[in-house]
Image (cartoon, rainbow, N blue to C red; front, side, top):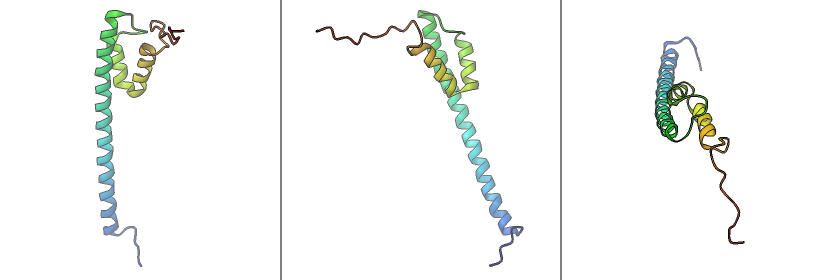
Amino acid sequence: MNFDIMSPKFLNFLSGWSQLGALLAIAVAVLTILIHIVFAIAVYRDATRLDRTRNLIIVGPGIWCIATLVGGVITVAIYWAMHHSRLNPDIPIASTENEEA
């Protein structure tokens, strides 16, 4: 079997795969952008709600929104850890003792 890598048929096959790869890359980029936007909106809304009841850590809602647009899911995880986990001293520790004893 004669397999010539520079034949027009092989180059057309390669062109089809590269177009599919480019389309897949564009789809992943668009999905990533949409996820960043959705998370940024959610963080902004939550930060605005929290800002009414207690102080936000480090920066305000607008900066958290911009940081989430840039940093994505990692920034959301940092925001959650700082504001909704026990790392935040304002979060009370639930009592685990049994009151019936």
